[in-house]
Image 1 (cartoon, rainbow, N blue to C red):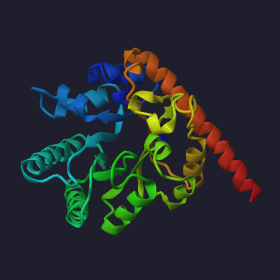
Image 2 (image 1 turned 180 degrees about the vertical axis):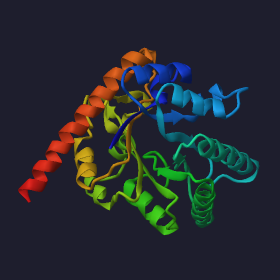
Image 3 (image 1 turned 30 degrees about the vertical axis):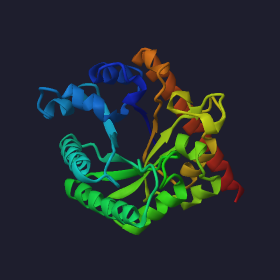
Image 4 (image 1 turned 90 degrees about the vertical axis):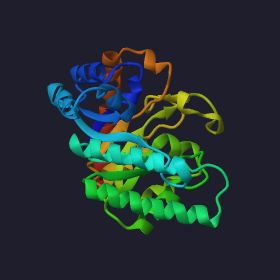
Length: 281
């Protein structure tokens, strides 16, 4: 697996500072928060972003995120899809292989909404495939549909296009109706991105993004997920993603060093567990 950190973990810093400091802390796989990338490119050619990655020895594994595509209508829909096209072009131009697609469907859903959602997924996956980018559908535990791993996998399988996979955010898995047995629905082919965080000492029903902390430091440690990914020989990116305003105050160099060390420790432990389980069989 490719241990990565999302630049959203240092939201208050500019992208050039984040990449310099994360790289100095020995983190070279990066999940790019699109707000950072677009802010950096303001007034610059798109090639400047590629040059920035090369300058700091960073490999962008994914971009986060695109919302508003699934059930929006009218002017809002046209605006979201135009934004999507620009972001696909950006990812293609700077060789970001994966774009996270938010499952941001909220409120009551009728048959027409479900049909629109399905058609939107197919169209988005086709456009992404044409651009040489893979979409990673991220289910949201607070959404109407899908809000769990089982439903998200069913949607992706129904679309049936290789340009659409899943983004498994452990936070949404933990606070929503997903179950550990659902992990067996995952295959190396369907998983496009894994995002890790733990949950601070609050009830899961009340947990928000501000309660995300480093993995294995809270109430929802991800060891079982990582062991499962290791056992199924997943070799894609696994990224720490924390949208915690308190952690945004930590200097990027300090945060990057702590976060990547924590993640590599977890991955090493999971590899040993998977090896032991295999030998026991």
